[in-house]
Length: 436
Image (cartoon, rainbow, N blue to C red; front, side, top):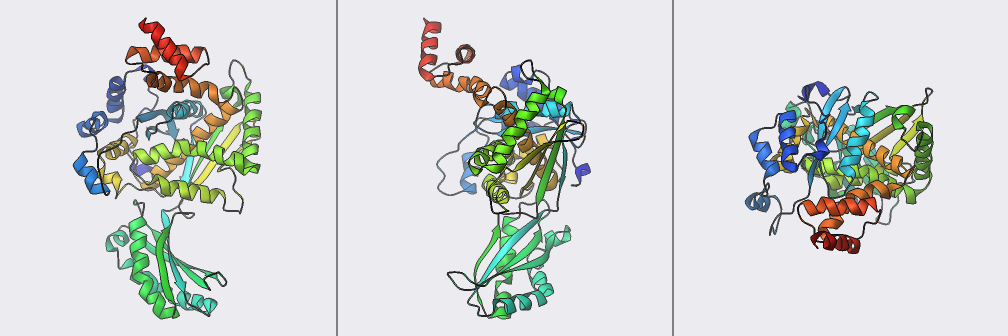
């Protein structure tokens, strides 16, 4: 389990009553008080120019402007007995609401439990031009200590923090369309960094030595985004009673969720959409904290196909007491240092909201949100269908597209949702009636 005690979220109450009914300004004020945000963090979240153009120009190439997405906060999360307010950057309606609602249900059942492995990343070095790939493998294994020393010489600071290159793996591909290949993996503990730059630098540093040892020629020297040694796990256990609604019993709800999960487990077409729903929860937290959501996506989907068949990322089952149990285990290469996590003011504010003390703790929170989002989607699909709740929230977007402004937005959206008829042309008709 990660060193959760290093964080400072103790004392934070994620159960913010009536948060949805507040105005954005009131929500920010309540958030600032609940999370003890600094004035700088509040300014970053409230500013229309949270990312100055001069700063953006230093982050990527050919900058002409900046692009904003909604920044929301999921409430009610309790993980390993501690409360978390979770920042989420996402444009899709219902995501933040579903995560918060499922967290409320989980909270009433003791919350979520998490654990994680060490933050180990892989760097791959491709060696070609070999006639004796298995002989080369043994030469490399014999030189393990030499290779580790060369790699660790590239980052004395990381080694001083307890990280660094810890081991090597050798993967042999005796036959390919480009001849035999030997792939050396550097196994690197990157501590609180995502680690891409660190492992890439180490891979490049050891390349000349690998060529000298094997007589081959090095081509690629690059990290792997299948971070299968850097796993984060979340578990939730909820009772029948907590899942019951006015329309459906808890037992019926559990049966529906299990049916929906089994569909995703056996069918890759369903699994793709099922897993997209999980990433609906994960990606917004990754984006909010300035981490690389593309790396997380790549690793998660590759991990879902690790047995040779693409399947559900999550599992759902029933324990002996009849409680629904959901689990999620995924590679989670995220960091607290480096990149946009330090340069983007809003990302720094997001981390201040979360109050996590390590990259492992952040990874565990992110996977928890993915599991909560999955539970919300399965719960909806197993009963009234996904569209009812989703379209009710989407109605606000349609009202805006139709031209509604200010208080008109809520009026138009409410009438669209009540009629279960969320269309732009209908929104325009309602807007004309209001204004008329």
